[in-house]
Amino acid sequence: MPETPEMTLNAALFEWLLRMGDNTLILGHRVSEWCGHAPVLEEDIALANTALDLIGQTQLWLGLAGEVEGKGRSADNLAYLRDASAFRNVLLVERPNGDFGQTLMRQFLFDAWHLDMLKALRQSTDGRVADIAEKAQKEVAYHLERSADLVIRLGDGSQESHRRLQAALDDHWSYTGELFVGDEADEQVAKAGIAPAAETLQGSWSNTVGEVLQAATLTAPESSFSHKGGKRGIHTEHLGYILADMQFLQRAYPGATW
Amino acid sequence: MYAQLVKSDGMKSREEMSPQERAFQDRIDRGEKIEPKEWMPEGYRKTLIRQIGQHAHSEIVGQLPEGNWITRAPTLERTAILLAKVQDEAGHGLYLYCAAETLGVSRDELMEKLHSGQMKYSSIFNYPTLTWADIGAVGWLVDGAAIMNQVPLQRTSFGPYSRAMIRICKEESFHQRQGYDIMMKMAQGTSEQKAMAQDALNRFWYPSLMMFGPSDKESVHSAQSMAWKIKINTNDELRQKFVDQTVPQAEYLGLSIPDDTLNWNEEKGGYDFAEPDWSEFFEVLKGNGPCNKERLGARVKAWEDGAWFRDGLMAHAEKRAAARQAAE
Image 1 (spheres, one colour):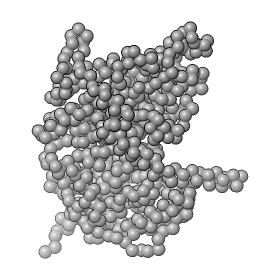
Image 2 (cartoon, helix red, strand yellow; image 1 turned 30 degrees about the vertical axis):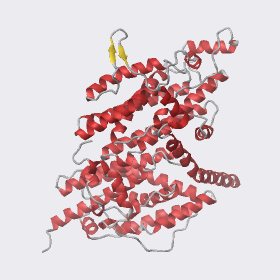
Image 3 (cartoon, one colour; image 1 turned 180 degrees about the vertical axis):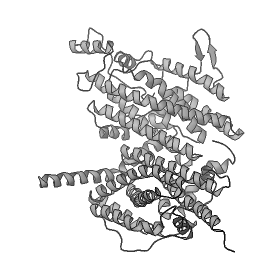
Image 4 (tube, chains in turn brown, red; image 1 turned 180 degrees about the horizontal axis):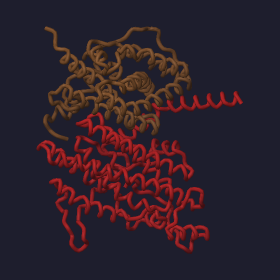
């Protein structure tokens, strides 16, 4: 028997909110791993700032997800008490930090998508979504400005920095396609005018990324192959370790308040 | 403190001073600020470079013990607060390196000296953070001790250092409050959390007392630094103040200070307390603390691994400059 349209939309919205919140949570976690280890002090500050923004956005997205779900789960419950298969982030954000070039390229490829997504969400028919997007968009505009600038400077820098950035781009490229592949949940949410359809963001992402890579003297790989799975809970091996780290206290001392 | 055992080149009497040195001392005695381009004795400059440099190094090495728990912080809010705090510390490092640069030493030179072991950072950061309660203890005790030292340094004679301290102190008091707030939650929490909080206090108490450095009543270096208003109080004065402030806070938390001899002394209006084990302090300074190798190793690795990044940015800047020149 088909579900009622309202139910489906609510479930789809919950699913979609988890994707937004899990992307920022997992990327924020990865970026925070750099703390104290960046190549210069200014980068330590910038990375902590980026991670802080992303964790703040996570609180908003997962908070709203819990509200929409209506089972009394808080943002913290969702972050710390779900196992990997219930996480909905794209695979790109859970990729290991690698060298600073890999971290930077991952950030840039994500930021370029993130900013377009948030800009579009300001027109969401759901006021709660539009409010979060309005706030997050200001932060993410800065993330993209910074990551694009560094990609250009390092891509068109020394031979070694160019080599590392090109290697990072080659590594991450096949993880970007997942951002633009919609499924039923995305379609439901798009039909209700809550969020843009996943595919619609690809054109402007390609333009942004293309311009920056050109200025950076970097070349995007030809392959259009794309790893997928994160959005439906099939992750890389890396996510389990992230969660083992992140959820340790909540799992080891259930019910404690911190 | 964040700058421990800073050496200066001995102290001159008024008669031994040149007229220029005497005029300089008079300015300090009148409470005037010394600015970077003004004349200063070479010893003043050197001592300040050592002190500010050590302070800056402490801020950046200090990111590591707390960074150790950022990915394991128990809630999103705690993660955000800890990130903000560690980011502040990197920012403090930045102001302080800038203050040192005004004295004619580059940040890179100071980094080299840190990495080669010629310059030190505070002994406290060579202790491990083993549980989440340690993050509370670091904020409460370590930042608490830092504030004790830094509040008077807002009045230090060197303008850039004094101004850096004013900014830093505002943020440090937020850091201490967040640490105390973590301890409060733990002390009021489950029996396991309470045990963690007590254990953290047990391990961090004496290392925190060591942060002020050994007694310097007789030290010529301290006497000179105090005459120059680079140092405002003796180590013992600050340690006493810290103990007097912290004991009631521990009582409020329901935790015990790990010192059986601790006792209120009515006559002096402060607590009597046990000295830390100074042989341990000197071992830690020599490199034999529990985490010296990891802490310095992490900084050296970050610097070496980041060489290509810094070189890449320089190469890009040079290309841009060359392109601009060609266009002109």
